Image 1 (cartoon, rainbow, N blue to C red):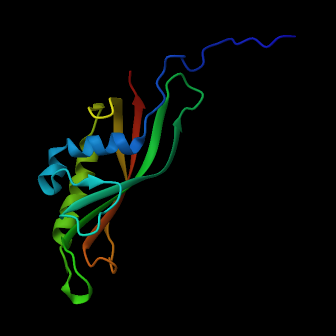
Image 2 (cartoon, rainbow, N blue to C red):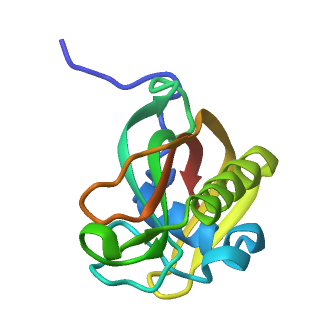
Image 3 (cartoon, rainbow, N blue to C red):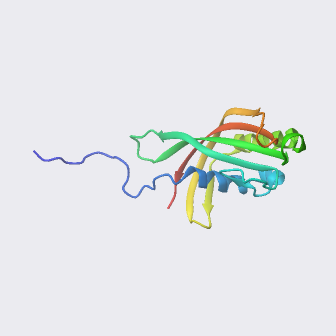
Length: 164
């Protein structure tokens, strides 16, 4: 007896979802609600003595939406951190909770308003469509004892797929 494929299963030309961090960063640096506060200072880690305010994020997991379906759609969980203030140590640092909250809230609002959005990164030629970004956790304040900066975090869920 031989094994034979039949039925419809993942089209051979379907693009697998690209790196969610690349797609999220491109979305963030092209969203004026965010860049009006932090310009393009958006990265996966906070550089020491970076110009502030600054937005960091990382993909904290995720899954495939309908893994047995025809389309390769990813759902990634993104942890976002907004920092603001003046660097220092001990009592010389000056946290700016108001700006950190404004930045975190701008990300939440932009996420809420995101509908089907095409994303294209010119440097890597990565293309994707974001179907939506859900807010899993609204901005919450974090006591930042190491840096002394104002710090708010939130969690998002981004649904997207790769494009040719």
